[in-house]
Length: 258
Image (cartoon, rainbow, N blue to C red; front, side, top):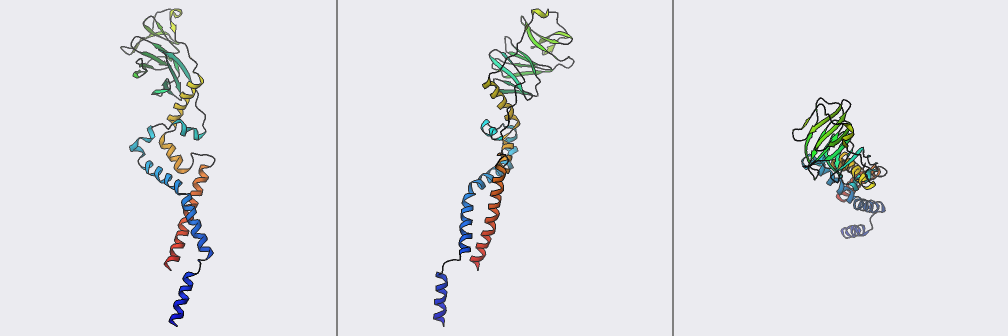
């Protein structure tokens, strides 16, 4: 009897596994390998997001390539002027010099003029002083002054036009006089410029990049929203695959234990 029982056990061990077990094991393996890359990316993005503040992700603009995944239109250039061969422009309340951000919370430009030591840029309510390389040196907002509409020069003097008349700006003292007695016709007013398509695209991309930070890109990637059409569904499919692998893994483990 013992000999018969042992032979019976040997025969059972040599029998092929049931089709159901083989199918479960095969799908568990295939889905695990298929979703491996996505799971690794989700895990990595989650780890980075946990330290986003330390890494300064919210302050760093995303590159243009990643911004393009959102399918958003580039913001337009609001105003632009050229001084000392530098294109100053505003877009989305940000001031740019040759596509590089130099100041936030900037109103619409009214002019830009080159002076001996640098460049003077003016919006309706502020002055910006830069060097010849367009690096911001000073920012000045007059307290009691009507909105400015034009910026120009009269010799070496900086003149602005307001609803109350002409005024003179002193970049050395950072002071704006209440009035100027120069004839309007003698002032060389700054003329608006029209950026080329390439320049407008660079400025728009920079403005959009400030609105879309690395932190937002990682959050949208982590949730699958970075690809509006299919990203969310890919995340759902991956989540379902993980649930399926958890269940089938438990089934396979319990059968092996038995």
